[in-house]
Length: 296
Image (cartoon, rainbow, N blue to C red; front, side, top):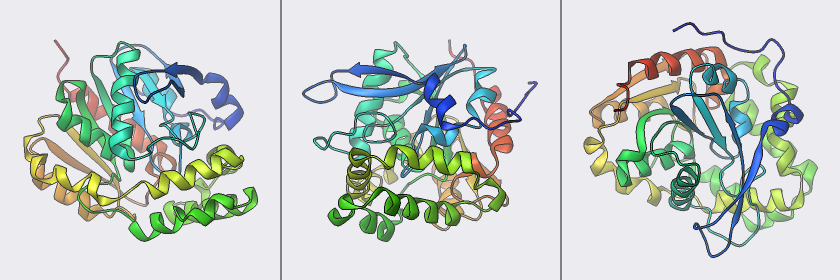
C-alpha cells in the first residue's frame, strides 16, 4: 500500500474545526446530545477514539494519511472537545461505549476498525466484548486495561475544586502533562498545545474535563480481564515504550491474554503516540489494516 503521509504544515485548530460537523444525537440519555466529529475519506470505516484530557484533535496529524485509504470518523466523546459538555450526564467509559454504539448506528455504520487511544481503548474493548460484530479490528494505543490506570492523576484532576480553575491555570496543568506524555520535545508544537487546550479554556470545558476525570476508575476495565481470551478481533497494540502512565507491560500482558493480538513497540514515544510519531503511527496502522480480512 502506497502511503503519502503527513502534510508539511501541521493542521491547526482553526482548520481542524472547519472540518468538524455537529449533530444532535438522541437515544443515549433522556434528551439529545450534541456530537462534534470529523468524517472524511471513503471505503471501510475507521473510528478514531481519543482519551483524556485530549479530544479528536489528538489525531490531527494522522487523519488525512488514513483517509487516503479509508473512511475516517473521529468524534469528540461526550464531555470532551466540542461535543456536549453540559454538567448533567455520566462520563464513565461504559457510558462512552453506549454513546459510540448509538453514534455509529446514527451514521448507518454496521462495523468499523477501531483505532483507539487511552480511555478510547477501554471503550473499544467494552464494545468488542459487548457487540463483537461492531468491532472489525482494533488498534489500541497506550490503552487503559486491567487496573492499569493513572489513578492518582485522575483523582487529582477530578477533584471538585478544580472545576473553579481559571483558564490559565487549566492550560498550565495540561501543558505540564503534555511534557511528561511526549518523548520528543520537538513534537510539543504550538499547534498541538493550542489545539488540545482551547476547548478547556472555556468555563463549561473546564468543568466538563474535571467531571470526566472524576468518572474514571478501574472498575470499568477489570471485569473484561476474564473475557479477553474470547475476543476474536485482530488487534494491533501500537504502544509507546516510554509511557509511565500506561506502561508497555500492559501491552505485553494483553498479547498473552488476547488470542489475535500483536505488539508493535514504538521507540522514543511516550503516551501521546499519534503526536510523538504520527508517521509511524499511520504507517503501522495502515499496514495492519491491510492484513485484516475484508468483510463479506
